[in-house]
Length: 186
Image (cartoon, rainbow, N blue to C red; front, side):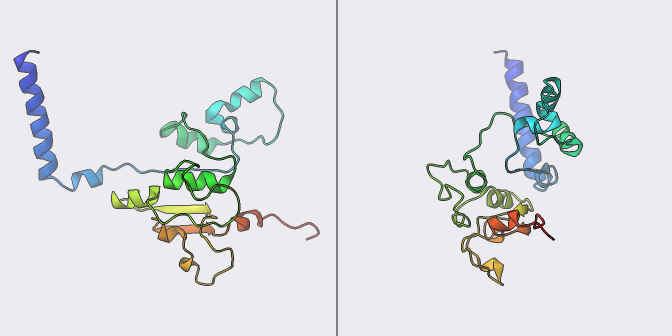
């Protein structure tokens, strides 16, 4: 390799190293926002940005058929992760595997036997917290532990606030996420 190129590479590396040491707060200001949306029972063809038009071309009238302009806009402007798989065929273990980074062979939540506590271990949220992010979980949790109602919910072993989240809003128990539909006759 040419000596000039090697010297240029060394100079660039050195200047980047010195600059980052001189400005320790610089990295914190440039961290990207992360919005991760995990939904239960959503197929890749259900969002407009992910091939929903293929269903339209095939004259597929099956349900559910929905328009998702806001999710499409977020996906177009963000990162579209298309090379993943679902860790489990049902929602609670999928959520547990995503949060813990464990495959189903190593995870403690392996089925929808509701309300098993997410292990007291590193989670995606706790790792992001250590990196200086503020974290929030919004929606159905179902990984808190004890099935009984607890007036002091933060005492549940797998409460989101005990698993790396700074803020939580949603249904704590798995079953509560299915009780928001109106009952017949009301």
